[in-house]
Amino acid sequence: MNALRKISSLALACLLGVTGMELGESLGIPGVVGYVSTAEAVVGRPVTPRSYAGVARRTTRRVVRRTTIYINTLPAGCVYGPYYGGHYYHCGSVYYEKSGTIYVKVVFE
Image (tube, rainbow, N blue to C red; front, side):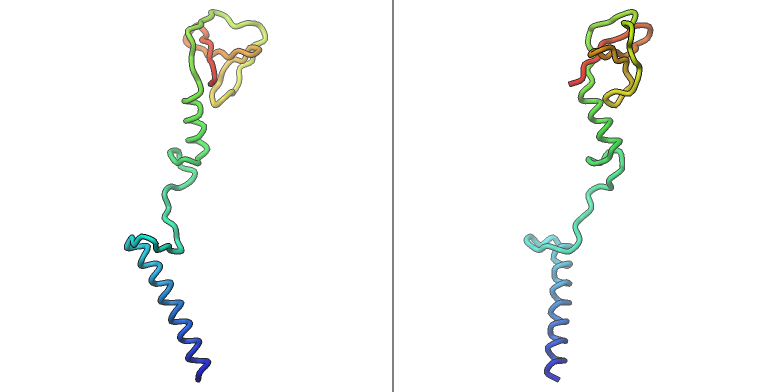
């Protein structure tokens, strides 16, 4: 009987402790930590901080700067392809982007 009383007391204490922690977290009592953290965003959505689509879009928007240098024809040996999240013409160490009938020099920062 003594062992049964100890086991039931321990089970009751655990149940009250878990219930108190969950109630404390849901009521917003400071200093009480629960077992389940709150979800702030679903990873993979375009506007979440860790989504690949959102990171690529924000990085491209931040680093591509078009200059005021325009040319009518590209130098020989330029390769068109995906660079830094967009499609540009790569000519040696210089990148160009087509804008209508001319090409604009692009700088990545």
